[in-house]
Length: 326
Image (tube, rainbow, N blue to C red):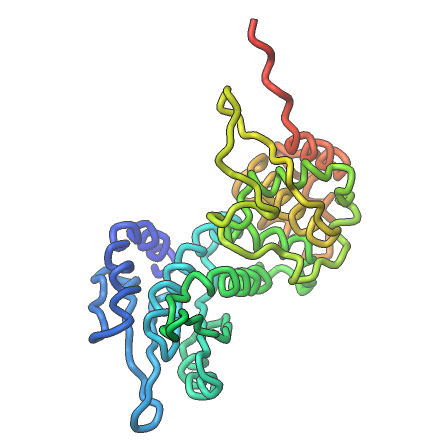
């Protein structure tokens, strides 16, 4: 019943948005907030003492645990990860495993929080060191935004790597990990990603090479969509017909970064053309040691071979201009 109930509960999260926003603010001071009253959701905050005069706080829900001595961080990071679960479910057809994030403000925090985090039942545990920025007077500044790209990318990557399809032991290749991580985080936007790829069509990695190459984690773009494009692209410019204006200042990206962007674009293209189950099929067959061509051979809407897929995907990066008006 829980597996059936949780997706329904996820749909009700919109109705509790006010509560969660209040939670992000309330965590900075005052008593722990009340729960939402929604069965299976109900994020709660508790205080765990560290010695006689110190403590840290833990925000816990059915899916996510966030712990820190700085309570002002809990609500924002919780919302961040809660939002990221939906795109993960879109591509992997299941919610990600229970996840705990420990935000380390002082060197001894990890040791203090370790037992609570590790007994939380979370299958994914991420520790993040926090450097609190301060203004000229030394006052601490809100830092949830500073943590967005780092925490979200690290958690999304762990979610993708831990995707349990129970069909084989082969590790996921880097192109799937790099591509799915970007789609879970939502950065960069599809439009910005494809604009960069279209500007470097001659540099794109052949898919037969892409599926075998190493793509380091450092090459996967990290950020938030509202920050704009990879190279200062103006997202809002359109021409007189309302069509997006292609930027002229896109910098040429190195091969590994281009491969990471290409991976996300390719995964998204396959999902858009074939439908909900295609990424799960690619993951399952890859973990059985089967090539991408094995999945394409069974596809309904995608080309049935890698060269055909490559041609169709590249064509989508540079759509033809609209016909002239008569």
